[in-house]
Length: 354
Ligand SMILES: [Mn+2]
Image (cartoon, rainbow, N blue to C red; front, side):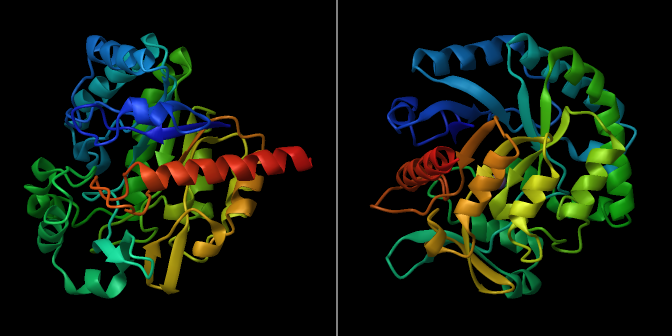
């Protein structure tokens, strides 16, 4: 296991590489070219420059999160052919720069969904939160407005204004798309990219849908053990793997997280480890990483990762906003650094007790 932190690049992140370098045990970053559009080819020059910048700070790139998949690929439109060719070219350029892990997702229209970006907790920290009631009462465009108003002047991944400008049209395009269609379109995409992944040993790691159920009537498929195993089997190649995100799979309380980890042995290429606190089945807020601050047993999650011999990068996920920090909600320095230290502590204890 390698401890990493997500970093959006010096132009977009409030956290610096120098700060990340000082978190004990963090040796790598998970990063991206944040200003590229889905469907665009990432040039080798830009990837190389990013790599040099990270390495000059004494860190390395442990993986990319994300190379986003264009909606036309998810929709299975004829335009997907050219877009998949571009995606392959991006993978080729990443491979040539010795980058071997790519996180992506296959969620229609929206990336993750939260209804509050700054819910206040009893200790005064603020966190992202979700309540189904609020989603049921909202039209999607309004949801974007409320998210945009609350981002501390940062651009939230998955909620970029360019993407949201087309929300209405996208909803119309997805009107008749079923879960089966989405599986088919994902399979098609994976089959096309597997040769280049094999050539450069690039491990694709699909991120689960967050929350792990359909929202606004859009189909969502990467939500539970049955579906993720189906996805592994339909393109049975080790490079077709998963990002195990405890906070996303964990939104559905029927998902047994340690059991899912064990059943995905060999196919988990990347892990996001964070905690949630449930107030009811359809109201949850993000908690500190510490087990007793939330609803998950973080020791059991880390132990399951240890038991399956997981060797990929792990990162603390969404932190609380604490100590007066102003940052992209979920992506401040302080609480994620506390999370990394805590997860490293759990891991050391598990290792030494074996
Ligand atoms: Mn995640």
